[in-house]
Image (cartoon, rainbow, N blue to C red; front, side, top):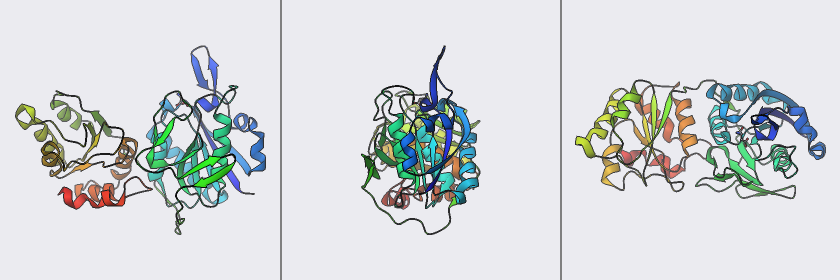
Length: 341
Ligand code: ASP
């Protein structure tokens, strides 16, 4: 039997009703006690790292989770992290950068309903998460939910209430979990090297959702407080060129300050391609202007937070950004960087 460590962080799975609505109150041991069949799967130790609604998750918490995995890495065959669903995709992405080349599964799960609810999805998700965490063929940071195994960098919460809350964005699911069995869609060689842990993040990243007619002055305001900017643009991507090209001038100001801007899209699927339209092509030629391609916003944000402490050189930021990590970017998208210049 494999040894798996449960790291509990809170979320609906650990919640109970209070006068003000649901709040995390159950501890790791209470959660495990609700799924006695887990004893047939693996040996489990549990620790309570925090007990928060994931609305309160932060880069500091992601560093704590990664440090916890690092501290216990050699003693366990796999890890299950219970977590609120609201920011689970951000945590899954952040951990994908903070813990790279792990040959062991690091599985994040949670539920839409408390584990004490009669119709809860919590018991199934928890069982499935341990099933994935003790599997010999799965590895790296994975999100398990509603019978799906999703790469940590590709997960997004796409439904607020239904049990199939998570989707894999522009990338196939890694596997399905059915009746206690794992059906693999993607099988890969496990990393042969030791895992690489990172203990630093720069949280000074801002996401700006473009709306028609937005005043470009907002970019200059943000330059005073942030080290990287993600612009959720329209369609395949571009920036408005009204007001005497002022958006472009504001973008140049970021470039001159040596700070990256990543342009992504508000459209849920298929990503950016700034080369298609003049409104995009003229922007992407500016040094320090990158594009997300099919990367999720959660991955773009956390990848920038991971890159920024490593370098402030724009060409090095660009190299690191376009180097695929844990399926965040398709190889040909990463290779597009030359054609962006
Ligand atoms: N607000 C909860 C959280 O993210 C929602 C959930 O877990 O489903 O912690």
